[in-house]
Length: 417
Image 1: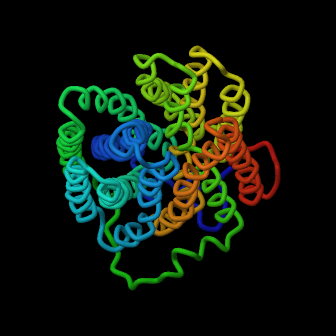
Image 2: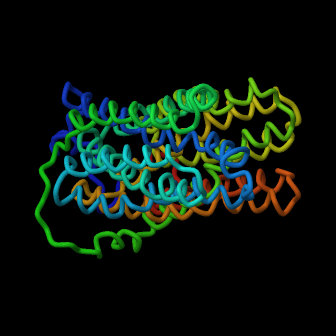
């Protein structure tokens, strides 16, 4: 059951023109998949950069100091959609896609020239995510206009692009660094991204025409007064507080436990290979049994994976089991999250309300890894505190999503919500 004053009911989907498939919709889906491979795919590979910076380029800095580079990257990517949402609603996606592509690739080329901390911070922490957030926001906002009943499935397929990036890039980048050096490794990735984003510029379109309307900042915060929206946004904040911790630190932790170097580089690819299934299957189930129901379930399972699997393991096999379990359970969190906002929003306000949600969750992405890294430093290199922090944050989000479900459905009834 999907209800609420701003929601378009399932039965009205056809009347509102949602194709739910067809050549145009699938073309947009493919272009959006290419975008997510480039943007979230690189974000899912931040452990590679964290390891390279700590062990090589920025080895004179502490792990917690270095982690601010990748954390600021995640914050910028998630905060700026609050701006791109308004631009999308007023002008459409094309200029956002074009400008974002140029900015993102330029940032990659500048990062390839970096030698000092501030070089990497400016390029990877600011310039790259400005462009990445623009193209990602445009792709997500466009896809929403083509799917309603099958939105969970569509977002799951789109987000599988980030998992594919998370498989390819953590293997590709270290191999290229060994062969041609860091600079040319990043340039090669930049040229690959340019090719994929050109495809996205040619294929991603919104079904709705942009509306000329004055800037109304109340649009961004009106939804926060709604209990369902407020609870959903806070739940997403908690998810992002813990979500990127394993991506950032599982490689460092595995090395600290003595895992073989040839095996270490495959941890993130394993996590994301399993994550492809973990994004698509929850999306299909969400369309059938309810998006809030599935979000609560996978948030609970992800928290359990961190607390019951990651903490006790002391060997290579245990790390591999946790990596696969976390990859499967957590991948659906990022693909189902935007569909929750879409479910409780008017289609004409999707850009602004999604931007608001992303802005709030960005502060979780910004602070999560530095807090976790500071915990490790304070405990003399022991990872137990980090693991507890990650698991408890995500586990707590399940309770918050349950409260959002309560507000949306009017009770704890066994129904599709």
